Image 1 (cartoon, rainbow, N blue to C red):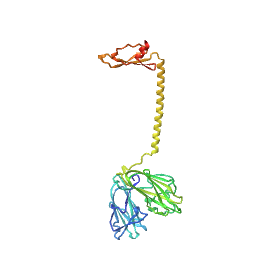
Image 2 (cartoon, rainbow, N blue to C red):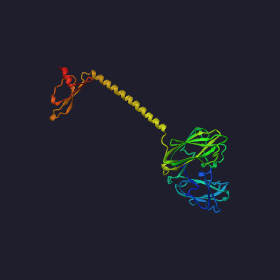
Image 3 (cartoon, one colour):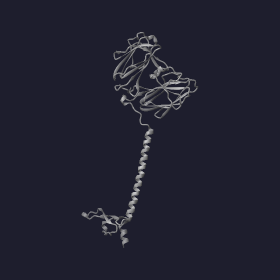
Image 4 (tube, rainbow, N blue to C red):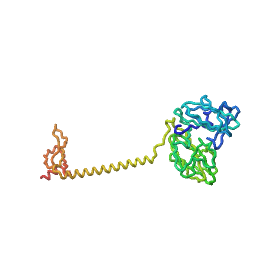
Length: 376
């Protein structure tokens, strides 16, 4: 499975072909998107109820019945043995590519109900614009706190949970985070109110923008597949954080799954979460500290070298003086440097050369004219 994600197809999707008269219904709670489809004719026998074509490596079909149901599934013309269960089907791993699945039921009086199907994407699956489902046990989710995978008392409908699992919380401060690329995001789960007479509050934060949500203690009690949060987004990469802000120990919130409309092309381009800012800041602080220490050491070494050089120049009888000397080559008046002993006298030059002279000796600066006056 590609990073644990699935492509989620609702029973109402126009991509699903119904092969016999069927009835599409809207039912609040317990069904994805609050919809389901049932058979509406005796013609919906083993010849086929619905059909779906997809690109991927596996398919899962969520059908439930009042009683154990005989059903059969055909993939690419190869029939599977007759099944006898509630109606759920999960295919073996298929070759990555195009497939067609056909689902059929035998006992129509058992009221089979089709809710949704999922496809496990492969490299051939085009994901842009598809509804992606991330189950609660997926490793792209980051949990913090006292979450539990054990179903609390008061809830006995795990078969209706997405892949029959959920993460449960009864503790303020529990949180979970997901990084994804999409243009919408929805959170689905279950609220168990128990005997508490208080509301359950959750903060949903998208890209650092908080959205507070409160569920009253008489709303959605024990109903699975409830949409707890939804937000339309600008297409791109986003971070969703879910934080439990108010709940009593006798209550529980079950986090089931997240869906979003994908803005990436395929499984090879699924966005990954950037490096946590805390680690990045620590690296910056270490770099600045190293640069500061290195700079201080360099300044200390430079000052020490200047002091030593100054002391040596004061004590040496061979201190060197430099002067700017006019060149007479080809009548040029360009100035050149000439090294001279410290105590040597200098010839005077004609005033029209306008020569500038400067001596550096014993750590002092003086002009040639000042030295001449001193000699007189």
